[in-house]
Image 1 (cartoon, rainbow over the protein chains, first blue to last red):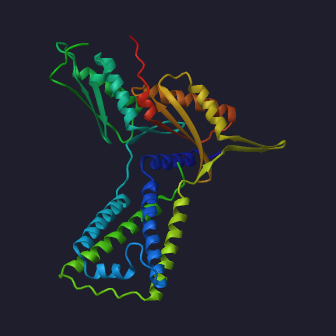
Image 2: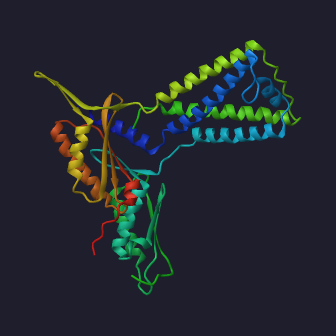
Image 3: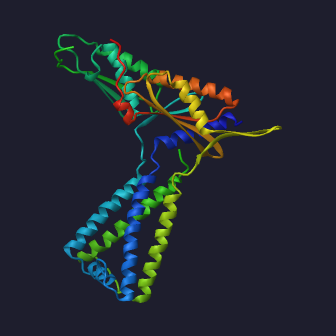
Length: 192
Length: 179
């Protein structure tokens, strides 16, 4: 048996780790590629010591290429700079996942933004009675927007749809909180 | 929910990234005449062995790093000892109990359960895949009831992490419509 406070802090940790990437896959890719490059470098060094012909470039020609860079060397360096910037960016950025936390008394709950968008769409479809294919919802970290294309000639009441969608958001109370935006397109579509 | 050391992952990425940027910067500086950087001397046999040896050492470190990712999975959810002996429940059993309970919820396409050791506690992670336009409140409440039933069976409350996911199967599954 664990105390309540203990479980709460465990849940906070679980949710925090669910809402952010572990970066393990990025690390694995970077390290595997780096290891292949180092294995090649080590092989070239050993071959040079033994006096055997180089696989691609001997250590001497690598040093020469760095000391007097040609256009090709500079191009390779530019490529390395880009990879370096990407890796540092991966390390420094928060690495948020498209997920929200849903408060719950018993469990730690996280939900993919795609599922949340589906739930909001469902509420809008029910309220507007428009076919599901003409309702689309985008959920980002702090805002959600529902776009509805009405059937020509029928009037949709945006406030009532906003109310219905807002009720779903309120019942779920996602964290971080979501603003609700409903847009009804000016142009309708003919047909059911 | 693995136990991978996340700050260490950040550190590893930053180190490799900075190394790449440093090499690129050195070559860039050598190609212009703004900054005077010394020539790199031609390596002799000793230096070549040192470079080869340290490359192998770094490769070994990288492999060790990679294989320690994703640890923390547990097979056993609960172990109980009393006068009559020792009993344990596997995570799979709990998964089956929860899945059976949720079989009738039409919005749920798939349930998977895994156990993890986090901070010395066993946590049950449930991944529930839903249909595209699902009633999420209903899904969460249903899972909550299934977990309450599990609590009663186990006579204890195991920490539960529920992940409501949209998956490939969710996109393929057709929305249930009532005409």
